[in-house]
Length: 302
Image (tube, rainbow, N blue to C red):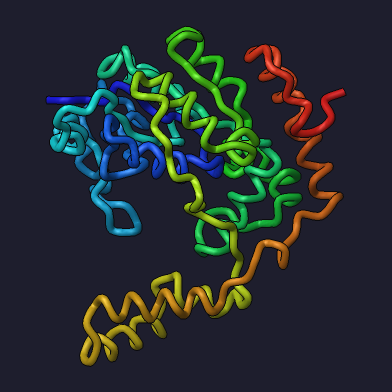
């Protein structure tokens, strides 16, 4: 049974969805039909607890067993590069590294890192849009939840990157910056193709971005559309009598789109940006030394 020989292990809100779509275009690359399997995010030496949820809140089956994971790659034929992307592996490095060592120890490992301030802001906007997770203002999270907010902690890259580099070595780990993706996605993909051992002259279509940040015009409407609530249940029961599921999904998508506006309507203030820069500065300094790479383009490190 085929298993991955490359993994995108970090980081969320850094263009991994776009990069994954570009990888899918290459005829020598097989990508898991499921992005973000999160298979290595738990201790795989322990059996799956009987009370462990088998499905995500969104209703997707969780990839908990080796058999579940292997099934994602059952469609592999003659592809040279086989991979998946689970950006939570960097955040969950203490669980992920031993699992990767045990199951795919030779896999090429890829991280895309973003200015952690911009990453936190994008993550926050996603939580507001989807009515999930920590939706407190970022300044409040820094002041009150700094040690527990996943939105903030996922931008502290140093410890996770150090763990991966010490476990696998620099030749097996490739680090790209989100800024490079924005500047020249085709050039980044050419380097990535070369790293995973496929034809790097393949011309990828990078003209379409996979995700754009949006926020709701009305939080009340968004709450109704995105959460399980009595009004949505009543509307759903009525619509099920007269409309097939595809039409209902299209209607919900149109309503969500009508309630969406650009992130400029919920801007990151200069004060909050400075607060976040101060929060991340020491971690970025250490990361810069670890990678031997100038990261002052993110924000002033002095």
